[in-house]
Length: 75
Image (tube, rainbow, N blue to C red; front, side, top):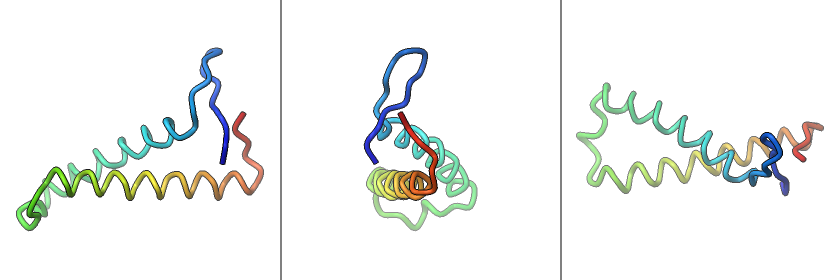
């Protein structure tokens, strides 16, 4: 999936947009994990958060690539 998004004449790499989406999802999931108390079981919270962001970035990119195959186009 190679492409850019055009925001008011500024071309932004698609990977940057997908990572920003993944950060938003990650913030939501981290808030839920704090409320549930999951972080008491985690040895290193920073590493866990980084791994969560990496997994979500890959998942969002894979989903975007899947939707791209169905005809949704990125310029």
